[in-house]
Structure formats: structure tokens, C-alpha cells
Length: 275
Image (cartoon, rainbow, N blue to C red; front, side, top):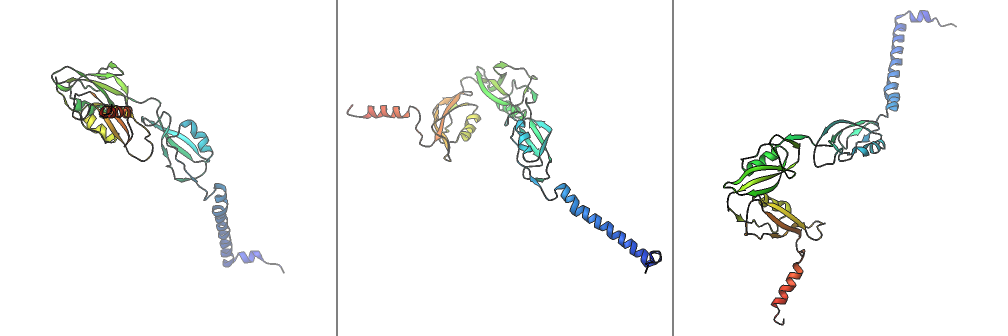
């Protein structure tokens, strides 16, 4: 017996059946594409954790990232003195992010040479004001040289790398500027007592008094024990002037100082009644 397809498809039910069959086939193909073929072609569900590359030199990146199926692209540069030139300062995506294989990591590198800034005019201003202006221009205050003059801490000259520098001269950010200031005559003041302070804490009263500091590390400073000032020169209370140097010896509490043992033995010999 022959099936009369023409008669069957000419009816309303046949047309609807054909439409439904076509829709079913399309849906089946779509599901197969999105849930079977596409995941297999794009490694759906397989991700890589982005490593931290901040602080790495650009020469290390190629091998480091290729081994992890990642790439990099430089899209920015800036400058900080905390890192060597051509090291990674920032990255995107951030470390710990989940990404696909072969993803590009965008990085910002530290410049080879720092940007320059014009030297501000500090002459005839106070030392405190000069320090604030230097910080605002990302410059550092260096040594203070005193010259005779009636005004205490009045800036008379600016020096860069040992030579006088004129206002407006462009210099690299982070440069150290020495200042020549008047001593105010014979004005002096007691040396602050920083014994027992950590080095960072000791710098506060020393720099706050417009003094300079010389540091000598004594003994082993590794470990968790605090490193403090064991000795200072001049002694606390002795007169000192702006720009003078305070020498400090830092180490763990109880660390003997160089020459201290010999000095104690000599003192004991002098106090021994049998000698």
C-alpha cells in the first residue's frame, strides 16, 4: 500500500506537523552547537588564575607568562623610585583573577628615566617652608649647610649634586637638594634624646630640629627583636646647632658597642685598688 504524502501534507494537520518537525530540528541543532560544539571549541569552563607579575622585570615576562598560557601587552608607563627601571608597576586583570588561556595581561612599566620638574625658588624663605615645597614637588631635602647670618633657618642658596642650582632648572623627580641657610648668629639648643628609639622614630625629633643623622648598625639585626638606638653623639642635652650631625648606633637591646668592652675594662682597672 502506498502512502499518499501529497494528500497528507495538504491537510492542516500535516502542515502543522511539518512546522513542528522543522522547529524541533532547529532547536536540536542550536542545543548541540551551544552546549556541545562551542564549549569543546573554546575550552568552556577551563580557566587560568592570573599570577602576580608586579615587580618583575620586563625581560622575565615572556617566559613567565608563556609557561602559563598567557600573553602581555604594555599599555602605560609611569615612574617610582621604589622599583628598578622597566619593572611592572601595575597589571590588569589583577592577580588572582580567572581568565581564559592566551589572555592578554595589560601592564604598566616603570620608566627608565624619571620625569623632570622645575627647581622651585626657595631663596629667602624659611627652612620649614622650603621642606614643604620640596615634598610638594617630589624632591628631597639633603644636607643643611650653615652660614653666618642674623636670621635663623633663612634659605640663602640651593645646591644640587654639589653645585648651586638656579630656580626653574629642570631636574629629575626624587632629586636631593642641599640647602644653605643662615645660622641666626650663635643660637644653639640641647640635643634631643633618642636613645631607645627605633631608627624611624629617632628621625622625627632629629629632622624636626633640622639636624642631620649618621647611622652605624651594630651586631646582628635579623630576627623579630626591635632594633633601637643604643648610643648617640652628641649626648642628650649637649648644645647643638641647626645642620649639625647626630651620630647614632643602632642594634638589638644589649648588643655591646665597638670599643665599649675595652673602655669598661680600662675603667675597671682604674677602679681596682690592687693596681
